[in-house]
Image (tube, rainbow, N blue to C red; front, top):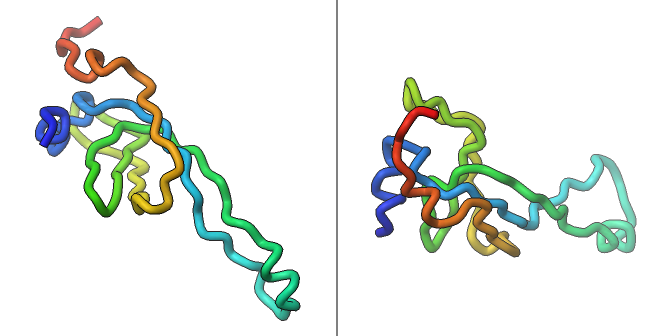
Length: 103
């Protein structure tokens, strides 16, 4: 397990900030539709940004908001790994291990 993942269980500021491009399920409007219309539907392409607090074979977990004082996360999102198209680290790897100085 990476150092950032060990630290992330209590402090998201150690986690890399990433942009995940993924395909989400698409809901079809309620009602009757021809099979042709149903088959024309496509998956929804989504981009999500946040701290990558966990990554496993099954899923990744992002949080979009982090309260460093109370160590609380907000707007968490679990994305199944098979749904992920692309993962981009938005901060240099060194930044996730930055000092905890106040600026």
